[in-house]
Image (cartoon, rainbow, N blue to C red; front, top):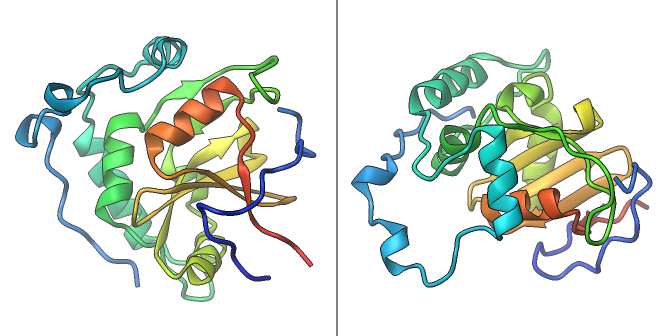
Length: 200
């Protein structure tokens, strides 16, 4: 199976699922210590309905659970598979965990292009799948870390070093977006992701 570029694979057809090493890293700085994006952003970060769904789940601008993210990082780094494969941990993953970790969006029903499914941001959902993530990372040519799950474990969410987000299920690997914001927006709105790899 050969990977397709995340920016160029053909659109995913309506999915079969309900339409619906280890490397410690320096902890990223909190939003208070970096340039305030709102000062230069000309449009809202999320569409209004996406922001509302996130806020209902417990997110708010500036949310930064870095202590929890560090605990997850330590847990992943210390957990190795039976074949010696270990998890990768890097700043993009830690940042996503710190801002969105622990959020569960219990959603269902029709989305814009496909049925919406519930999803959880929690890297522990992929704790026992370092081999799966390592295989994806080799295909992509970069490190990949767990991010969470869709539909109560039917799909594994993952994030790479560049902050791109993927979903892996029994039908294949899917590209959810170039950033965590894009991925969350697509999941909340029910947008159709792009196929990352075509199974032979």
